[in-house]
Image (tube, rainbow, N blue to C red; front, top):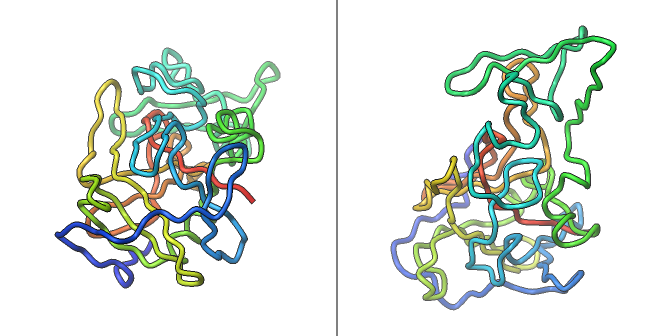
Length: 246
């Protein structure tokens, strides 16, 4: 993982004079064309938001509706009483997945004839918050598309986007100069929001690729005031979703 300091400029004054660009619309939702090699088009606001500076809704990974409590006890794909993840996980050659970590359940699966394994590595459409809320043409980005977004723009952190007093990152395409804005709206752990200033994470649709330790995590886009990069977050947390379309 490499933090992209090269294209980051930290500023302490209001970032004015640049607005979120709009290139078109799909199913009533705006997107911006950043000229990325994959032709991926990024939404101009978060799922559940009415404008780019709104926080929108928060989702646990693989869930499609916001809720009041984001925890392993309430997570759709975890049977907490059995310390078991029931969908989206890595397994070994015997069909087992076990992990003992700090502050998370000891998640395990046993291989037997009565077990149906769902060891997908990317979210199915039915579990994709973008597809379920905005229509089938929209979806959550893969980790590859998040890396492309990070590398395809020059990024500036602002504590006040266009005088709105909203903190976040402004990305300017290296290809066509179009602008995307990602607000720093924090994330939910259980019933409380945290890291709202100045950090934020956005879900990808990709399970974190570490079969030994981290089937309980998924890839994210993460930023703080001095960096923007890809990372991973625990699946039960409530994070923002920025959708993509092609």
